Length: 405
Image (tube, rainbow, N blue to C red; front, side):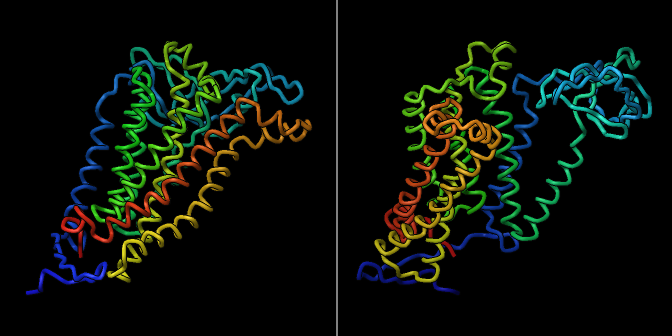
């Protein structure tokens, strides 16, 4: 029988440490397996539970895939680069109750390049059918059909993750799925139900951070260090978002589709608070990433040098953190600015002075997202290093509870 204890020299003292053995399933820790399973089940349950905003398609409305078999452009007019008028389309339904039936419909143009779509014969389109009493009465072409491409892209992503990372890849997939479900079915409906956006978003972010960190790292020292480090960075980002969000006075209506949302019947929505919440939510992923990078690096250091001292380990964590935030801050800049490249090109083409550009509302929005998010990154790296130093060297609570083989 193996000795369940070993001795380590720490701070010039000989410390007795207990080795904890955890049941495993084919090399997978049982606790990790159960947690992954619970998160997957929770995600499925969340999808199935109504959030109060579902408007299921009735017998009068059915979404189907269709093919355009005829196009009439006689009523389509082009003025410069803008198209007006309408296209007369004949489509053939490819699935569902009315499969193989053909019906005429109209594609109206609004004179907006970002909303108008010009269809051609042979294209597959996503269509909503109107039916009454089992008879087809009308159809509306919504957009080009992309669901099959989305499915293939997601399938390739999942396969690559599983091939490269195995069990960890499966945990990442569950984490990705769980995060998407929580945002779609809990966070966004919570806004519509008039929950305080900042507080509700913070609670949701903490839950997601817990799930992501422990799904990826398991209930290990690395997971605890990443989680606690992430939370510290998120809290600082929340404070900065609230403070500078009010100072910059960026109206929440600047967000896409805000006006449409208000006219839909949600005039009392606190869009400014939703915008502030979006600042720290959008940066929380990068914060978790940095915390996990620092935590994983410190875990490897302890693995190779178990007798490392607290101060020495924290310094190593600081060194790793400096390298990580050096690239991650630039990553945020690239991620946020790429979506506004056409707008920036307009400013450049018109010779708008830099001071004018920086004072625009929409540029102020991007500055808030980028700089406040970068503050979170700069803070989470040293905080994770300090927290991880105490956890990995087995100080206090962690000495007797989190050592693993």
